Image (cartoon, rainbow, N blue to C red; front, side):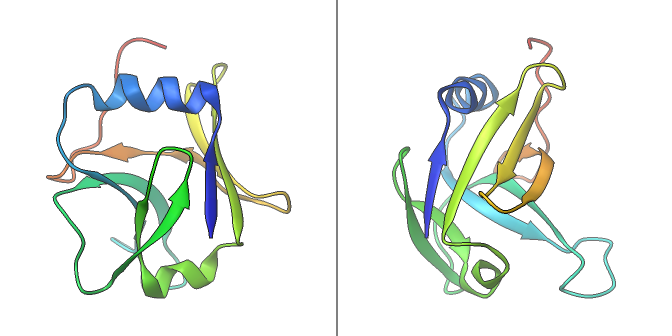
Length: 116
C-alpha cells in the first residue's frame, strides 16, 4: 500500500502536529460502533508499533496501520486538505474513505487548531 500526502495536507499535518512526539498511524476506530465493519479512519500519533501493526510507504515516511484494517483500503491512497471545510480527506481514485479525517495525539485527544 502507498499513501501520498498532498502539499496542502502536509502543511495541515505539520500545523496539527507541532512538536508532538510519536509516529503516524492510520487508525481504524470502531469506538461506539457495533461491528468492526462500521468504523472510521483517523490519523493518530502512537509511541510505536504493536504486534497488530504493519508499515506501508508514504511520501512522509513509513506509516503504521493495524494489519487487519488494511483490507478495507485500496493499494494507492491520498490524504488531501480542503481549505474550505478545513478537513483532511482520505481518498483513492475510486472513493472517499473519510472526508473529515481527524488527527489525534498519543493519548487519543483530537487536535483542532484555530488556524485554517
